[in-house]
Length: 129
Ligand code: 5GP
Image 1: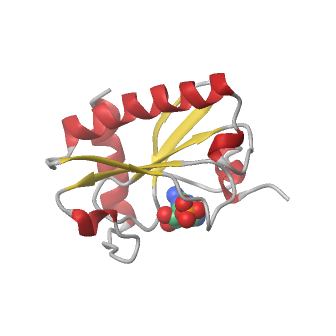
Image 2: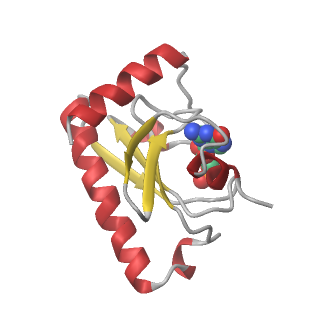
């Protein structure tokens, strides 16, 4: 069965898109740790990060770096944290999280944003590429 992220990539499920090319997509996390929490996802459905081919792995990091730079230009924060987990969604994704302290990297600490706020934020980030 297709992962929830494949359904997003195929347009079956909506997302607040940040960036896309022929191999990767980035969109806002639906349940963010902090404002601007973004997921960078390869379009090929592979479960685990280190099972990606070497080229896809390096290109995912390059794509994520470009997204992180746009996040830094948009959201005042100390830095962009990066995490790879995958326990909830078995389709590789890099979490990029604008952080100010360690609690922003704790997946127990969540913020709430409504759909309009998410849409406006995604637009602001897209303008900063
Ligand atoms: P992980 O698999 O790394 O533990 O976490 C999966 C992440 O995907 C979570 O942060 C969760 O909020 C996010 N997520 C799960 N389903 C959706 C969805 O349908 N849309 C979006 N934008 N994010 C999702």
